[in-house]
Length: 369
Ligand code: GLU
Image (tube, rainbow, N blue to C red; front, top):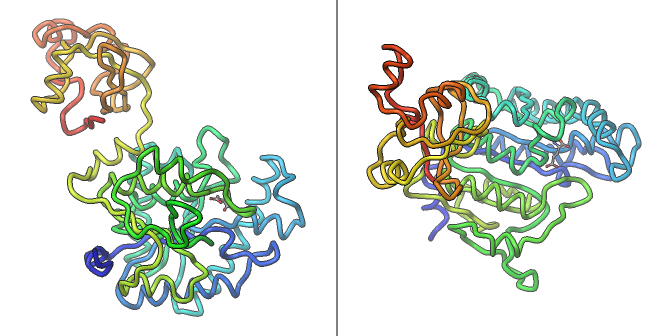
């Protein structure tokens, strides 16, 4: 399909920039950042809205501290990120300033995305920055996160940022031309509509010496984007004027196309961001009610409760064989559910009094796998 057609309705774009594109001899490079910023400024002037996700904090810090990234411990890398993030933002600020734009720094952790309120707060902040004409520049808050609450790579982070800001397109720029089905074949695949394990197996491991991502993390990002119904492009950031040319419709890189029955709004957040705090096992009748009749989940269909969760937390739903079939936001705490599971509405009224929820999980707060 012609690219111009695929990108016709795009207005808001997230551009992810890999460390290897903006470093030179181990140091952050003003010249290389300026090239990309000019390209982005071109898009802004054409009326597109741009959000940047940039790696390079750790690389910049290593350069300044004269340390070899490969020999560093995790706390040392976190310290390097603290040093490097300032250098990185200084360069972005200087470059965008030359083009007449202010920037705003947003540092996120995985926790910020998993909590609905923080997710929405960061959306409001970024929307406000865009309204005020400032370009949000996002990175992971490497200095404060531990492994458990870390995205770990900016490919994944940028897919979440795309959902946070409700962008139509994510462009991943790195030093590769696109996704190759076979490395011996010199042309990247033009269009991909579905990510499956076979494709991921072809992607292999490894990133470059600079970054932490590789093709696998890019495909995982593409999976989120496709299922969200948006689009993603992997392209080579070293190509002259790459962003402007992509938006003019030139077939650069690989485009991943999501369309059709995509998840919107809160359901998208439940699917990709909310962390399940527990499990509910439900009987076969409840499974049918959810899958075939598109009903909400009632207490009468719940046979088991696992984990400790609060009202408003996400839980995963298991069928009687223990297979996960969906995820949703519960109206009851785990303690309450342990008491009312299997009970009919009239019995729940007797146990909990008049103020109780009809549904354990409302249809609008439920996604099925
Ligand atoms: N957040 C890391 C940094 O700024 C980069 C992670 C990645 O390479 O994807 O250095």
